[in-house]
Length: 373
Image 1 (cartoon, helix red, strand yellow):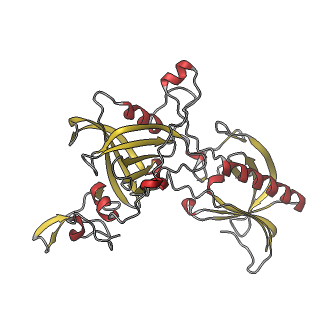
Image 2 (cartoon, helix red, strand yellow):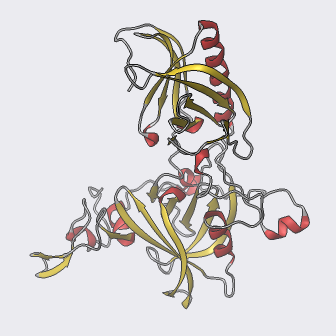
Image 3 (cartoon, rainbow, N blue to C red):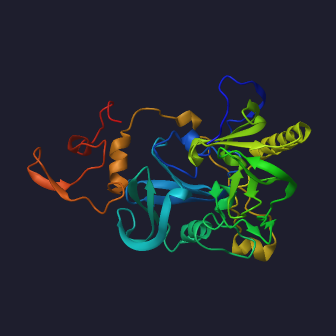
């Protein structure tokens, strides 16, 4: 909590809307293809595979699997409006299993378990090219293991992308720098105004994040990546002029306050922080890098992005019934094991509890009505 007097003067302000990074945080269904394939700043395409079947939700439909450093995208090759976007932060497990594909028969497929907005989902992707398992290597390589010592993984390097409180970010009084991270300044005697009394500590500015830790207890700290910052301000408060930092909704929507004396130093730190914030917005570092074995052996540059087709002329914004799409992948209700059967009077049978927002009638619709959400 930050204690700011109401109706006080805003002295300076830096606000950016570039860091609403939903791509790795959400699961999205049936986005327009131009939106689904639009890479945000810092997002890099690792691989693009054609003739991939979404066996769980669109069995019998050939599609394209696009693997980036933030998410996996699948879209139909025949209907551009049918697509999936699966953020890596939602994924709980990746494995393989034997499935019965409508186009390929009994075959091995990649099996993804994910959770988003309290619902659990399953996704199954089958490579329709006989003997080709390249999508297993590409996807699991990004998400689960390394190819060489310089590869960074999404799961292992969350400090690039997540606000961290009371973390093990220091060693012997020094910040543990991340790969590609450079420290620009460390300011002693900075008050963190998270309590009525405040806490005295050290404020560190790098090219990726800001860090503060208490002088009396290094484990009382915060690591805030720039991708979670909405605004950087100097405001007048009951503590005098303070640096105010607001985070976005993905990190909890916090307001942080720091008092830095004297005022010249406050303005200098704020200017430096705002400048690095803007620079990082243009080319964010998400901490996920990937090279293939072939590229290592041939010393090729890391992953030249494949050329994506232009689907704008085929865009179809008609409603296709997202509720029905969700039902195809949904496993069970939030936070619980598979739901207990409940009697449904419309069909006279006991069925598993449907997720919120679904009805038995909508599940039976072949062509969804336009009022379904």
